[in-house]
Length: 529
Image (cartoon, rainbow, N blue to C red; front, side):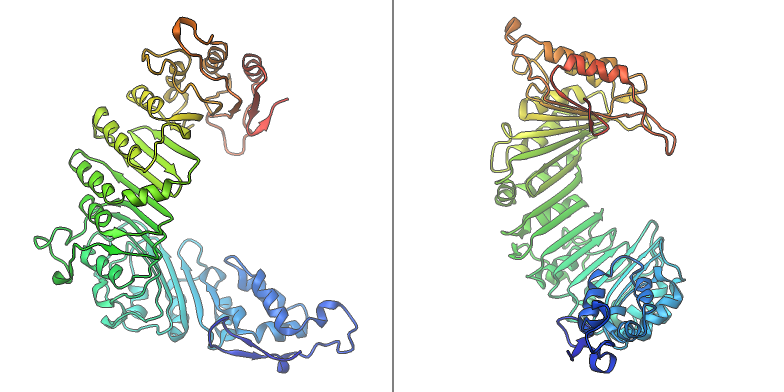
C-alpha cells in the first residue's frame, strides 16, 4: 500500500510520503505481522495511543524499535505536533524539527515544566506561524515572556488560546496581535488573571469563552464578544467582582455606544457558568441572555441584602430556562454547610448561594423562591441532602429542608481537621421527634444514611439515633414513625497520620448492626457480613 499521511487530520498540512519511507521490510509477507502493517496505519495507531504530558518521550522510544519504525515515526509530522514544556528542552527541539510545517499544539505549565519559560518561547516563537493552540499556566501574572509573541505578532493559524495565572496582580494591560483583529480561526479563548484589553482584538465567531479574575474588563467588551459570536456554545465567567460599564453612562466602557439592553439570543449556547460575578453584572447577564438549548447552568454568588433583588429578578428572566433544565430530573441534591452555604443540583442546574450575612428568615425566603420557580414542585422529588460542618442555625435550616423536600438519602460529614465536636450536635436532632407538628421527625423518609461521624471509640450518639428511629412506634402519641434505614454507610472521620489505615472498631460496628436489624451496613465502602 502506498500513499501519504497528512500532517493534521481534516486540514491542509505537511504530508509524509509513505512510499519513500516504507515499503514493509518483509515484502514476502514473512516475519511478525506488525512488520507487514502499512506505514500510514502504524502512524494512526501511534497517534491514537499517544496521550499525557510525556507523549513525545514515548514517541521517541518507538524510534528505537527498529530502523523502519524510526523512519516512519520521525518522518510523520503529525506525531510531533503536541509539544509540552514538561518534556524538557531536548525533546521540544526534536519535536519542532520533526513537526516540520505542521500546526502545533503548545503547552507551558509552570508547575510541570522542565525548562525555563523564556527558553520554551524562544524555541516555539520562531514557529509562530504554525501555532494552532497555545495553553499557558503560570504561578504569578507576569506575562512579559509571552507578550513579545502575542503583542507584536499575530499567529495566523491560532484556533485556541488559554492563558491563566495564579494569585497576584498583573502589570500593564496587554494589547494582543498589535491591536489588530484576532485571527479568524480563533474559536476558543480562556483568560484568567491576565491583563488584556479585549476591545481592540474584536473577537468574533467564538465557540467557547472563559474569563476569570479580570475585574477591569468593561461589561460592554464582553457583550460585544457575545453579540459577535452568535454560535457560541460555552461561556464561563469567574470571579469578576467589578465590571465597569454595567450601569452606563455613569461608568466607563471601551465602546460607550455599543451598550445595549436588548435580549441576546444564543441558540447554540449549551453551557453557561457564572461564578462570583459582580451582582449588577450577574443581573444584567441573566436579564439579557436567552439560550433555548442550554444544557447546564452553573451559578454561584454571595447573596447580600442589597443584592437579593438583583439575584431574584435576574433569575426571574430565566424561568423558561430553569424549567427546561430541570424538567426531566428524577432526583435532586441539596448541600448545606457552615456559614449558610446552600447548593442545589437538579438536572442541568447547579446553584450555589452563600447567605452568611442574611438573617435566617431572609435566607430561607431566597431559597424558597428558588425552589418554587423551577417550573415544577420539588417537594416530592427524591432528594439527597449533604450536610457539612455545623453552625448554631443548622437546626432551623434542617426543619426548612424537612418541610420543603423529600430527603431519601442523608449525608453527614465533618472535616477531620476540626474534629468531631463540630458535627456531634446534629445527631441528637435526628434521634427524637421535634416540636413541629407538621414534621415530627427530621427527614422521616430517609432510607440511606452516609456519615463519617465515627471516631476510634465509635459514636454512641450515632448508635442511639439508629436505634431510636428503627424502634419508633408508628402512630404513638399521634406521631408517624420515620422510615427505617435501608443502607448505612460508615467511615472514619478523625485525623490520621499519612499512610495510616482507617481504624476499625469492631465492637461499634457490631452494635450498629444489632440496632439496625436487617440493614446493609458498610464500613469504608465494604459491606459487612
